[in-house]
Length: 125
Image (cartoon, rainbow, N blue to C red; front, side, top):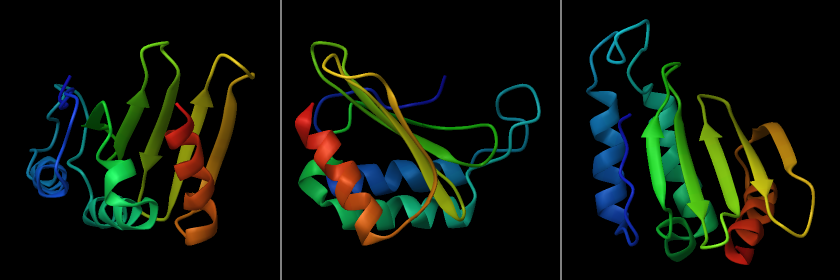
């Protein structure tokens, strides 16, 4: 699987990696995968701006998906996780923490209101 699992990231490192996913070839996964779409890449950078560089760049993993989207994950030592998939028009995420049942948020518009909630979940793990 493509991805960049490491502890600390700079904003420019993450942006460079996001853009590199755009240069993947058709069927990069050996099946029918498409490269990261331009709007998904742009929305990923917009998400970084909305939730703040410090919070965003604490990601533990990120990788392209076969459908032209990108996933970002934040995970702590207790295996609590926030996983976000960013697409052309919306973003979807789930929060899996020990204190509560897994929460799913599907097809949300990429705006300040929804990303503030996401940011709070990321900061809590």
